[in-house]
Image (cartoon, rainbow over all chains, first blue to last red; front, side, top):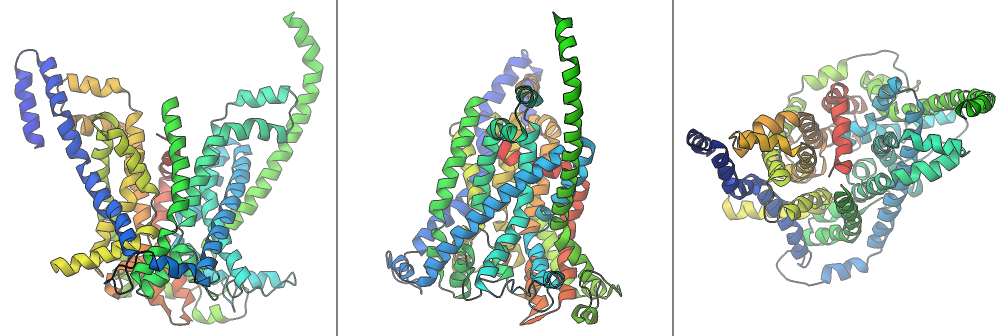
Length: 312
Length: 303
């Protein structure tokens, strides 16, 4: 097809008024070729994203053998189970506290990196981003080994300070803490990089003006840095909220939901029920509970993006 | 008047400069101190992976300092790199990632070009839709997708579940939307005069894309490629759901399902496997850090 287009173009060019004909030809073919160029993308999204998303709503209304329509039966069943409410609570605690700590640590570290002379920033940035680069499934294995009940290297170190041994993954509260800690370790570098990019875009004159007006460092952060970074902070937090809320790898590998379901979040519980327990409709219903939170975050992100699109 | 102000502010300024530079030195020292702490926090797990991978099984269970290796040995590496099973995981991962990266680029680059430059009916909506798709997580889609492919197998007799190549259909749902999105951003930042000139000179749309857009937006293309590779290499949920036979597994799932047998954890080999599994993204990152970071920040700052 490309060859044909190329040829017709040539012959057109050979005729008189080559420029105008070339332009007109291009415009005539424009919408058709644009459609062909986006067709694979549209097909992919329609068949492998939109359709499954709707299909999961359909699945959620079937009984376990997937032979009978039960309407909201699966949801009613879930609402009566204590484990479900435990999962809802844990998902919210997990996502919100992990995102807050990631954002805080990212913000602080970004400032420290920004303070360092420019020629040394690269080295620090390179080291601090490593957690984000390692596949989470692989790095969580390292954490699992660091948290090992009998050979934990952390407990070995803490024993010198007279602390421990801490049941990192054995006790419900500690297991929740460990899961959040690993998630913060993995996600904070992303915030750090985003905030660092934002910090670099704040004009130096604003700080000079603030310094001349006698602002201390806290006032400089509160009145200059934060307002200038507001957009990036908002969008990064929302992104991370979605990703953290839908997290699977870390909880699955570190605790697999245990002890006694006390670290299960939506994704891991949906996997346990739907795939391991082969109750696909119930698993689909569980994961559908992620939709409202994701939708709210998505709407805010989208609003921000269209706003910025209009500004530019 | 200007001389007067300089005269007046001279001495006060000097004092101020002195205190500011002292402040700065202290701020710098504190920055280095905390950065060192955070760097230790960041690098502890990978460092511990490396330490453990060099230990023999006797030393792992011995009551010595776990943070150091006394008798370094390469036995874990030799065992894994000569095991057909592990090499199989590695090849499965490599093939899946390479093919997915190629497919992703073939789909998303032309689509991004069309969406950025050839305004047509619904193109703005489609661009937003692409972005929304990127926000749909894998943990929402794995159950319906699993059922879909099972039903597809029953209907057509083409069994895709539990074959490594089923991942070739699924991974693009993770990579294509983001790559398209950042490529739209990169393409939109190219000045319009450039492609108008090309079209006036008689170039077709395809030529404009290959001769002008791709070379000019090459940094974006590299960033998108790195992203697609990292995502397909690291993906854990989909292969865990879709593949179960040991010869069909990719690296992350393979390490977790075969090296952990019941309650027996062969930690030396697990850490070696994890380190080898983390190596390709880390190597790419070490050489192409700037592109990696560009891709990371482009998602939220472009567009």
